[in-house]
Length: 209
Image 1 (cartoon, rainbow, N blue to C red):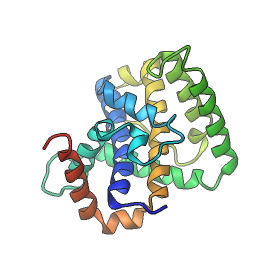
Image 2 (cartoon, rainbow, N blue to C red):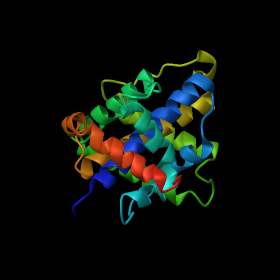
Image 3 (spheres, rainbow, N blue to C red):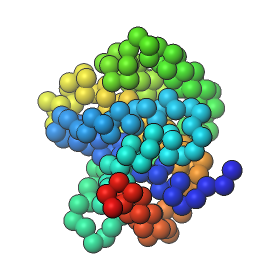
């Protein structure tokens, strides 16, 4: 299957959306709930017919598209070093995960279990988020380098926040996998920043023309 620049942009926006959400929770103790739910839902959309359907629709990744624009546009003053570091590390960890098929199978099996239990606890329920967080903690978190989250201790020490951060990081890995599948690579990103920026702006206009 062939993928477009738009597909790669949407997938990469998924990574940056997670990075933004994690930064907000760690620094402020809260973040955009709709964006959190869209990112977490991407973990359970196993058989999506196309890239955008992984996030539901463009609205599901709009925060990621805006964050991607801020991080790539040299004309803005909205760049954030934490967001860049989280996104790059997620992409790096995904590449390492790719070399561990047993761990990938384990993650997939456990996500299927979580999905099968949504009749009892919805995706935003603390029990569901805790299960997603545990998947991250016992799999991705064992791969080096670990993502070091910077923030306020009062927020980071809160169990609900830490679970939410881990669950979101798992979603970030999901988006990084999707980005690789669509043909994304760090080298390509380095030399195609302008293409990603233009595409992100066009996609954003579908919601805010």
